[in-house]
Image 1 (tube, rainbow, N blue to C red):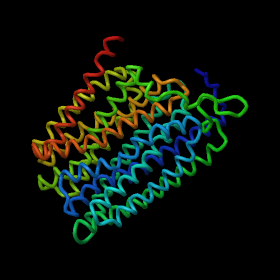
Image 2: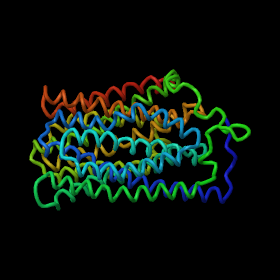
Image 3: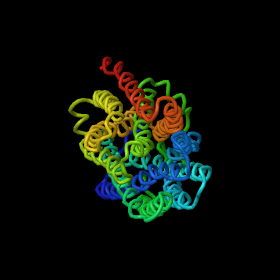
Image 4: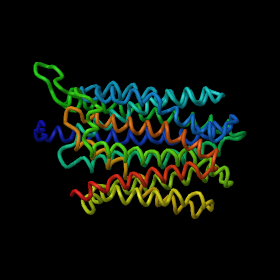
Amino acid sequence: MTTRAPATQPQRRTRRRALALLTVGTTFVHTTMFLSKPVVSYRVLALGGDEIDVGVITAASALLPIFLAIPMGRWSDRGRMPVLLISGGVVLVAGPLGLANVDSLLGVGLVNAAYGFGLLALMIAGQAVVVALSGPGEYDRNFGWFTAAASLGQMLGPLLGGWAMGAAAGPMLDGTTTAFLTSCGVATGALLCYGLVVVVLRGSAAFAPSVPGTGGGRGDAGRGSALALLRNRQLAVAVCVSFAFISGIDLLIAYLPVFGEHAGLSPTVVGAMLAIRAGVSFVTRLFLDALVRLAGRLVVIMVSAAVAMATMLAIVVSPDPIALGCLMVLLGLTLGLGQPLTMTWVVEQAPQRLRATALALRITGNRVAQTTAPALAGGLSSLIGIAGPFVLAAVLLGAAGVSVVPFLRSR
């Protein structure tokens, strides 16, 4: 593994400036993303769809990323993050605009699938930039701040979406159109921030191949079998743990609006519940590095999975807004930790030339989760009712916690 030379003072300033812009851009990305996600569910219901349709259309946004994540990761390892940042930002703006102008379930599904491409490009490139700008021992801290920005967006998005839908006079369909147009405006801020990141880092080592070649070539960066990475048991388990945590988050976002409709909760109240969870996740991610130093990364993952599992099961018997709000606090304390911790775990287990590819493999696992989990949840809903998605999330989180135990014993 190549040792990175100590950064000079100007380089450190450039890195800090780029990380700040990336962090702000990530907040915009997740604001528009988590504004749009629950509104997609309401759009489906407004167009006459049911719980099964919500599951299928939610899964549609993860279809393209399953096939594109690893190639994009290789691109990032070869220093092509700027292309992904800009193209992803353009699609991020176009996605909500398209969703605001379709009036069929098929149209919502197709646009949602294309929208997933933009989100994928920004996630892969953003994570690769964090790796490129982080020195040894800085991954937990920088990924903590990176994902804290995401949590801030996850808090603001549902609040903004609930406000936009509530402010729109008329039927739910008109409310969703207003919310999507609001999301499009927020996405423009993300595109601007990522454009500035490209300008600040232009010509710097951050956009160089992860393993430089000789004579100007790209060396071994991005070369090697991505699936062979899974022979490393810890890396494979990290991908599976990430699968479980992202399933829990996505099932909560997709099906809490449906649960709210059954329980008589307004979109504004549901948006506030989702915002509470994201807001608490934002705070815990700020202190992620301290948590890891105190208890150890794997212990934090295991405890978080166990508490999140119990909380998911409690949701289906807690239609009262106050009780539901307390459960959202618990989910904020736990669900938000899985993603940054598994990012660092994957980076530390992967060879340097394939770090972005390994992160892309993790994202591929996430997208498989986001495709299969909502579809399975929709099927479970038809069998056992609205409890189905939350029971599925609990089972996945419980399995994630158990999978970490062997590595705790080996330490």
